[in-house]
Image (cartoon, rainbow, N blue to C red; front, side):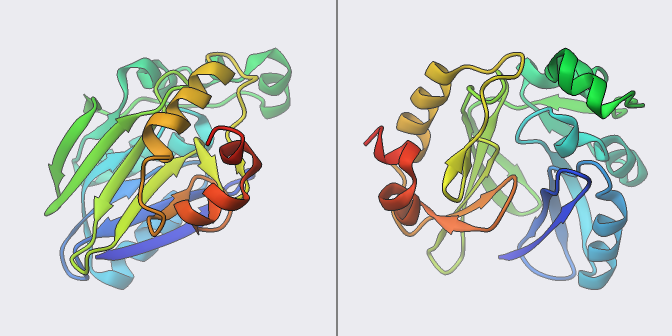
Length: 219
């Protein structure tokens, strides 16, 4: 499995391209603010074609470039229905103070949007398991994939980071729901599962289980 990742935008959100290998289709996960150029460069470098855009949640730093990429390549943007409105109304998730700091965001929704639900998606030759993980936002999800070599990968968005978890003080956030999501969707995963978070470096479930104070408090 090919994984290409880079951070973009003022909040340095991670965008990922996932495919079976060079020269085929791929999934573009969380193309946020300023990610479009990086996505196009990675597509050229690895001779990839987007099959879909996937969003772990609807915050602007993860979806601001979704319409640009999806529409340019004629593919759908997949997002949980609880966050779908954020594709065209990003300030609704920020609260008044943060919205004032960010300023006006000009977002036109993608031409084609599909609803993410819990279960499996077959896209770009990959099987993606979708876990609904509300807490950071009502529509947050985690994407899980298995590699041909027998490994496991989890794209956790802003549900889980290396050493931390997503904030819950923005509109739609919930400490109780985030704790429940971590217990049901993250803690049961194998320790060797590679975590590709929405911000910061990659980690593993085992490392976070032993060192992340938020997970240690839930175990």
